[in-house]
Image 1 (cartoon, rainbow, N blue to C red):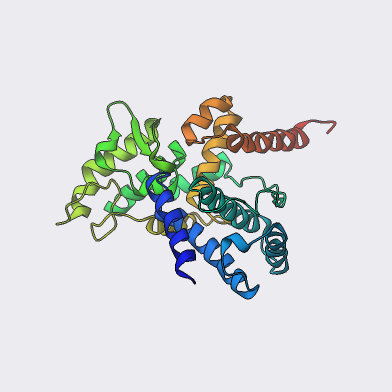
Image 2: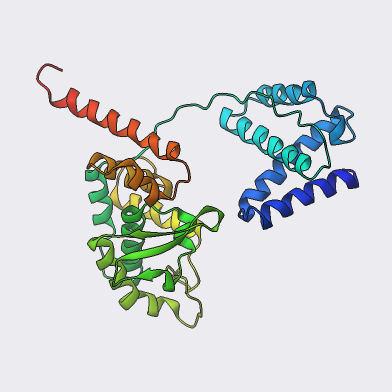
Length: 299
């Protein structure tokens, strides 16, 4: 990779870090997509970004299709390059953006998977127990299902962010945007029991303010949370997979099924765009249809 290409990429990464305040995971994904395009450029004998034309961008899209990548993956890579060129245009490093008119493949419409209320009850029963880890796992599950927060938001939750008196948590979401999220009485009871009875003993000699801790006393990571959820579904003897995001889908679906309005659910989830929340209306309509077909005598 030439010095110029390397410098242009580094300038873009610094922009994502400082101005956009993207997470390490996000800007590393951008870096990966752009470096992948640099490899393509080398194969095509293109030595600088200003040599890339619309036909080259189209050829890169064709190459991605030939690799049989998912449409969502292809769209992400093209979007990364479009944003990269847009940044270079803004900084007057380049005059054109060959990816401006490259059509992104249509997204596959997949309905979010969620648990039925009966399944949630079975999972909650699998969390019951009196050990230090049982109390932690119950609080973790109740909070994820009761607030719909992302796994990263849960892992980053600090003690000062939890207000047990008001039954709310202060969540730092994408782009460091903050929002207050309420939780109900079940999560309240589980959190109180964990914080008062379990967390101090689990902490051992560790000094930090993370709400959820592992068995060694360190802060629980996103990976650790996923492992705990897998253990819970194993104990519940339920078929299928469980992920923090599936609990987030379940949170939103159950709210809408029980009459919550879309705007409120958007605020609770921390979605910047209402369209990201609207996918759950398809889920609820699907649920209504299943209920109708199952119970109406002339269905």
